[in-house]
Image (tube, rainbow, N blue to C red; front, side, top):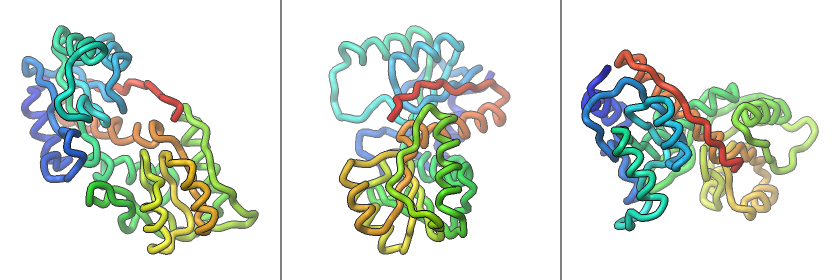
Length: 257
């Protein structure tokens, strides 16, 4: 058993929850308290009734989320919102949310961990959101076909099929960037050109980014919004369990996107 306050203090400090600018309604940090004790912490990418019911079934006292409970100001607590909140309160489950702070963390962050999964070593940043650099980039000398194979294997492990823009026979990835989630945009493609990147690995992006990327000579690997953001919540929850002598688990709830 561990004190909720001590776990929250660790997470707030490690993730710099109050320092990192995010969407105004993201509310990074403790979003719902419990009575103050945690025996089991469960992690999930998204906040949904399915995830809340799975946390209850596991006997969780705390839920760690990447996409937390709030994304808009002053919304009525009715329908599914009421159902989720009433279940959490009835089962005394605390909720902690970490969005951009968990994307950019150098050890437990989605982007650093995704690069590691693909055998890439970050040396600098890439991709800004809300004025904060959240992605990573680096240099390599790997056949793009090999990088695609690694990304395909990652996607298969996370319930997703890899989508890529066209690649050429014998193509080599020498400068790359990684940005999980909704990582492909006109802005990130422009930044990729400015940095001289030839390949970027992202979660997802609008249709037009695949068209733009070909014109710009950039290969894009779309590895899935959900899949690329499973890494951070898994890693930080395992760390919490180890530090505080409690148990942890990850709730799989893939969207296919």
